[in-house]
Amino acid sequence: MQLSFEDRTYLVTGGGSGIGKGVAEGLAKAGANVMIIGRGADRLAATAEEINAAAPSGSVRYEPADVTNEDQIAAVVDAATAWNGRLHGAVHCAGGSQTIGPITQMDSEAWRATVDLNINGSMYVLKHAARQMVRGGGGSFVGISSIASSNTHRWFGPYGVTKSGLDHLIQLAADELGASWVRVNGIRPGLIRTELVQMVLDSPEISGDYAECTPLPRPGEVDDVANATLFLLSDAAQWITGQIIGVDGGQNLRRGPDYSAMLEPAFGADGLRGVV
Image 1 (cartoon, rainbow, N blue to C red):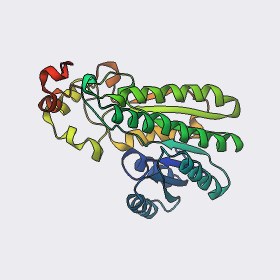
Image 2: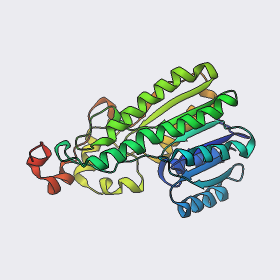
Image 3: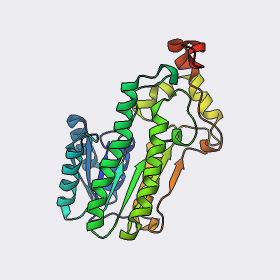
Image 4: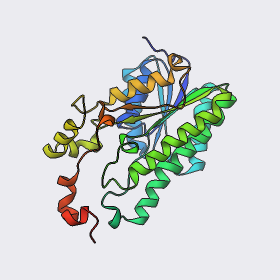
C-alpha cells in the first residue's frame, strides 16, 4: 500500500528528534508539508535541513514552541494552517517525565510538571489543531502514548499515569469530533530505540528483561512507530477513530519491565517497596 500526502500540511510536536523526527521524515518523503515544533531551535533547524535534503517531494519548516504554553501552541497551529490554507492533521509526540522512583518518595513539583507536559500540553495541541481541522472539513490527529499507560511500569511515577490520561483524552475527542470528520487516534509504543533510552538498551539486566516480556523480542525502531502513524493519518484509515494501537512487539500481552537493577542503588531494596 503506497501512502501519499501530497499537498497536505501536518504539524508534528517533538519533531526535532526520536519518533517525532521519524514521523516528520516519513510524511515529507510522501509529499507532505510538515511543520515541526519543539523547544530547541538549533535541533529543529538541523532536523529540518536534514529531512529537506532527503525528501525533495515534501517540505519541512520549524517553529520553536513549548507545548505547555497555550499561546505558543495556538500561534504555531495558525502558522502551519496558513502555510497552505489548511491543516490536514497533527501528530503529538512531545512528552516525557520529570521524575521516577517509588511513589512514597515522589517529588510533588516534578509530578505536577509532568502532568503539565503530558496532560495539559496534549490538550493544548489537540484543542487548537482540532479547531483548524474542523474548519477545514476534517482531518486526523495522532497522539503518541506509551505501553506504560496500559501495563504498570513500577517506579515510573507520573509517566504512565499521564499517558493513560492522554489515552482517555484521545477517545473523548474522537467521540466528540467524529461528526466533523476529525479522526483522533493514539499509538502506544513499547521500548523504542532512541537517544533517550540508550541507557536502558545498554543495561543487560533491563534490556534482557524487556526481551523476556516481549513476544517479538527486540527493541522497536522509530520507523515501526512512524509507519503506524502514517497509516492512521492516511485515507487508508478513514474509518478508524478512537483507537489506541500498541506498537510494542506484543509486550502488552505480558507485563511491564523490571527497573530494579537501575533504581535499587539510588533508593535501596526497601525504598523500592515503599519504606521511607
